Length: 253
Image 1 (cartoon, rainbow, N blue to C red):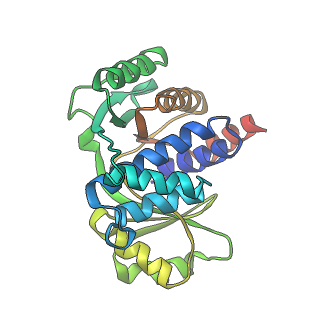
Image 2: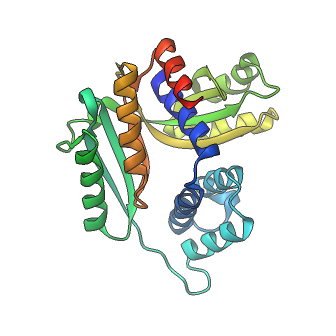
């Protein structure tokens, strides 16, 4: 999980200083719309919508935008949204595996943008199933480390079904079975522990350690993929040693 955690951490740092805030907002809004369409507008009865709204609020999406997205998704007021979920598999530099999750209203555009981002940045599309076997859907909860210890988190979540608690630069990452995500998230809330996000993600079963040069290329490729409005999430199996992580952090200085 360490490569996954460190990429999440790096992505979080970039998001704070990035000029792509509007694009991030649009993707969070799309998640809310789809969650409301599938499970309805009631946050109490739709945990996927609840988590999508919480994530948007943590990223400072205005409440009015969130409310409108819920109504559009649920079909309240005559507006409607229609997105198709598509998963592309690919390879990045040095054979790093990629799972590229899209939500789109135009399959042809999504396919073209994913293919272009891959080929221009040292990657390629993979045959269906050739990458997916190495990933498992897991619940991933990112917990702020401010005022919270690893023991606090473990005490709160282990009885609720958490599989792993791992420290990282922003706090802690709690990994669960996908079906246990809501239960573990609720256990954190009951313990008064704040969390940054709670999502079902594709987590690699086997990781590939990469050097700093390869990591930079992979980051550029992921950034290019995420530039597409249709790409919601990119998951990868690369891992970073502490030394490589330190070198990459020096790049940001």
